[in-house]
Image 1 (cartoon, one colour):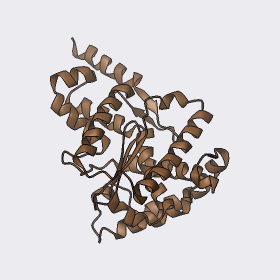
Image 2 (tube, one colour):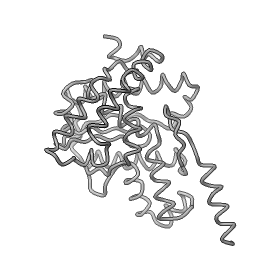
Image 3 (cartoon, rainbow, N blue to C red):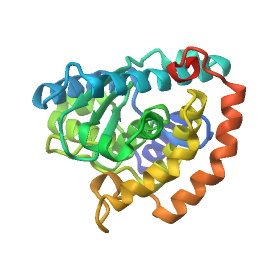
Length: 275
């Protein structure tokens, strides 16, 4: 194959794999079929839960699942209203709590969410927990994992199918998935998303929590508490997040827009809205 032909095929493959993120409409590259990425994601999620002390019941579990389901309802209401409900067909929502003092949470591709007990000491209330869970779900909705995995596959393996990558370099492909989804190679350690992804997740998450009936004014104070909890050095959860002062200001500016989303896309089945 000539160099020119290879370049043409590469450009063609990337262009046909361009999509737009939910809410923001940003163009992104997503080379991995959602069904295949989610299959890998679900497998790693189950493995993570087996290796970590997962709470089966209790007030923390009830709280996380109640807020998580409210966020899920907001997602489904919005996607139905946009005529895009089919885009959620590969999601299999699940919300679990891991007994771990780290201030962390994550959402794997396909809607598999874990909240660490350590972050509940910082959220302090369900509105702030909705900030966290809306933010993490936003990463999955915006296909940030797929986008990062696509970039890593191109950089490390070249333009190839996921099946070929799995067959030829299964361990390397698994590491790429974990990195793309926010995991590190050690259990319970999260690799950071880019600042662009974090800022986008902040915005989308704010809209989701407001639609679900939670107070978007709780977002800025939560992230300020999160920053203070690090004692000056940002925890891994915040390692590539936006500058704290700029983040707070931007979130405050987005509150009116979040409230407009809540008015336009109300979620009647949300536990918060039913109270």
